[in-house]
Amino acid sequence: MTEGRKDRAARAVAQWQAEFPDWNIRPMEMLGRLRESAAVITRDHMVPVFAQFGLQDGEFDVLAALRRSGAPYELTPTNLFEITMMSSGGMTARLDRLERMGLVARRPNPADRRGTLVRLTEAGIELIERALPAHMANQMKLTDCLTDSELGTLSTLLNKLLSHATTEPDAGDA
Image (cartoon, rainbow, N blue to C red):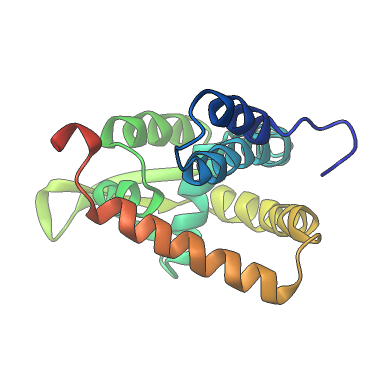
């Protein structure tokens, strides 16, 4: 644990364990740490890097998804919101902003008269190719406390957890 960082999950678990000593609190502890890790990594590390390039978190994701799709760096809005795990409304707002910035362009989809295609512009390609090395360096710095083996194990376990969470009914459905 980094000096000065409070382990909120451990504190909450200790409090719950004192109140309910027979309860299994391990899932709460792990999920609390996972949630806090995601929030801290996004807020304190990812967002500032994206801001250096005039981008917000979700906008970087859209540009990166288009760039990694390969030439001609073009996808439907539906493909984009599925790939980036955001809502269609959130995608529309991001595309509107990216289009105003001149980083993407929309055009009618020749394969679907009602559809649209979103393509990276030259400015969008140039920006994402400048931002990617900074993003990759940031990710390396964030994970340099883990060995390659630990990274692999953590990635495998998170994939297993995510797969389980997306196939189980919501708690409200029980």
